[in-house]
Image (cartoon, rainbow, N blue to C red):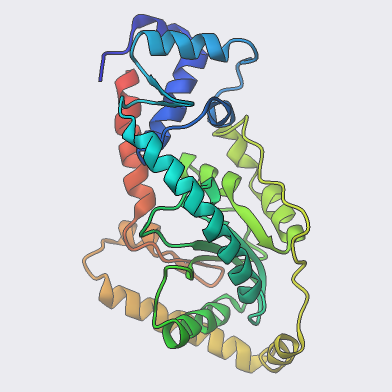
Amino acid sequence: MHQLPPTIKSSVVQIGIYSALAYFDVFNYPISEKEIRAFLPSTAPINGTLISELNALVHSQVIYKLADYYSLQNDDRLVSKRVAGNKLAIEYLKKAKLISKFIGQFPFVRGVFISGSLSKGYIGEDADIDYFIVTKPGRLWLARTLLILFKKVFLLNSRKYFCVNYFVDENHLEIEDKNVFTAVELSTMIPTFNQQMFTEIKLANTWTKQYLPNHPWSNFKEIPKGSLNLLKRFLEFVLSGALGSYLDKKALRKTLSFWKNKFSDFDQVEFEHALKSRSYVSKHHPQNFQKKVLNAYQQKIALLQ
């Protein structure tokens, strides 16, 4: 990559452009002018100046224009890969919406949202569909266990269309990890079950504007409200008392014990980040993808120094 020209250090907009491109460059994903505007980490006025600043950076070969997209890499294959992934995402999203409605029928599930690459309109050939799930307080681990059992028994443990890897309860909607990665994930999250819950998540995570002041949260209408069907009502009634509390706590203890044995090579800090396990949150990211992305992003941003 060429050295950054002196002008980039005196332009907030140029620094913002580079930062936005750097984040998506971690994924080898070129982005459009509209997306650059949305992910610009600056509140500086950009109307009428973004195009000229983009042109200046392209002219200096700090960034490259590839068809209708911009990238830190001068590689046209990235555009072909993106376009193919965007088309595939359309089909995946249809399936994900149907699966979300199904997940929403499980006991104690109060909201279902699509996250990961699909929420950005892209899917790789070997990618999973990631779901962010909100549950009733005190029943998160019971709800999670029922979903995992369904996946293991009926889907033969396949995660391709059923990757339920992040749970929080209704009383803990504010995400504890506050960084550009979680800000992007929350801001691009697609609500598929319970619009009201999505509104509450937005209100609980206004801190994302510190990282993405120009990015509007997703705004989808005609989302199922999450009403309780008869079976769900019955199971929640049966498990509403002491039995449900006992099973929820036991599910947490069993899962946590299993993870500590399986990932015994993790130190305490790494385990907490990748496999956060409390009564109100379950995060199962054994590859610690967030850490890898943030490290790679910081390395790219370090070039601005």
